[in-house]
Length: 596
Image 1 (cartoon, one colour):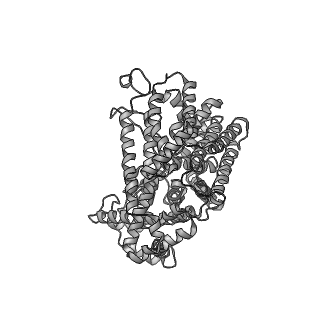
Image 2: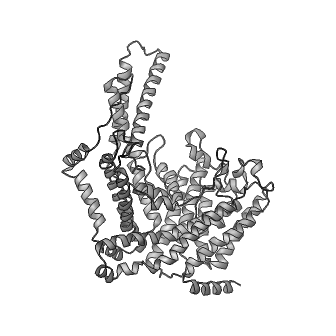
């Protein structure tokens, strides 16, 4: 039976011109739709049956379609290792032991695939599924840890994901081998899966919206809509190779036959072609998750509609229309963004501290190493970091030229600025993403050389002008073109000196630490030496302001608890006002990453 299926796949591959590995992944994703229709009709209270059904469908995928017995061993090793560590290792370091176990196993397979395995486009690379598994299982370790911590010590996000009781092996394997996201994701936390299996995910569905008393609401229309989007991207995926290919870029004819302008736009279209396979498979996989119900994300009473974006992983429109790097990266691989932020970036930070240089650097290293060991990944990641720094500089010194004095209203020329930002951002991605797909160092550098490394020179020139020896006169010139800022007077009970101290301490950290690096790629200017002395200095500045504030109120005695309490509350309130004011200023300023 299995041999017949494999023979049929081989024949179909030859007919449609898609390699067997990609075709098998696509078939599994498409088959998830009829399997999801069956799943929705399983009794709501038959939890074990649901888990066994998930496992059985995945077993059919692995043995019947993928022919991936060795890959199954890889996934089981990570899964069972995580289960043993999280269940029996009862130390505060358990989540990190689990994380390093999973990452070490993934690293082994990355190295093996790179150095000891001959690439065969008809054989599925199991590291793709393992990467999804690393996200799920490392998060699982933290969820188990959080379930044993006092609630008040956890963030709201951690509270919502905490696991109070370690699951038994069947629901755990059902989570690990959930058929709709087995190979390509999307990744999600165990808490979501547990609510999904027990149907408590749908508690807020009004009775009038339920279908035949089934707790899972109808989702066929939304699933079809998302799937049709995937089909649209698939059509482009099959058509574009007629016009662009990396083989042509790496051939000498590309430079000989085409002009420089043509080549830089060619790389843009080629990078769009690279993204199409992700748009296709992620959109269809999300459609399958919506159909079975796990994509449900609540009922909106105002619009009288359901939200189905719980496991959304990609927003193609936002990426392709993005006018800066941050917006594009936010739209790409969104579940990886969540994982890096909530289970790497914020976990490296000590409790009660704000994330800093160590968190940023560790997140960057994790993201890069998680993707793989090929040098092409690192060329793209470093390029992305440089590109974000370049974008921050432009938004800080160029964007205000096209804005009114309030910093919110655009001048008529702002539309031209936005258009140029879109063109430049997309061309930059066309350049910097080539190594990510080519992977090998030599061919990657050659692809860049076909356009004379022009993006690297633009970035380095920008850094030289705005951060080099001539930075002061250059910045002064551009600031002279900015509209005059309106003066806003803020009434504070702190003295002007005290207000200045607090404002400087808040301002020095807000712009740098407010957001985690998207996809682990931070701007280069953030990766500077942020040491303990600098952080302690900021704390001391706040303390000095408090001492001064209290010292000017001589009527308060040491044993006057109510007086001290009122003074302290007053002090905290005024600091919060400064913080809120600075935060709003930061969010609405050109420095904010999501502004253009």
